[in-house]
Image 1 (spheres, rainbow, N blue to C red):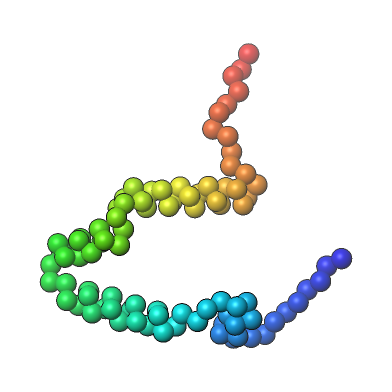
Image 2 (image 1 turned 180 degrees about the vertical axis):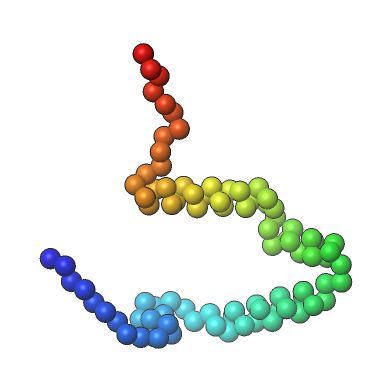
Length: 89
């Protein structure tokens, strides 16, 4: 049996239906603070220091996150392929 339900609602209504918290005010505050900081950055060095603060693992963290996403996509498409090959006899 297949049942299809179609809801016609705004994103705000969907958020409330699912029970997710309203983070609009938090997001606005975050964007304002980030804008103030970036406008006050006078040198590349300040931006680099900021980048180190928000991404402490730097490139290694990005690679780890990328491999996590690749693994998740492989698992969702039917499993990751094995890297080992059978030897020919």
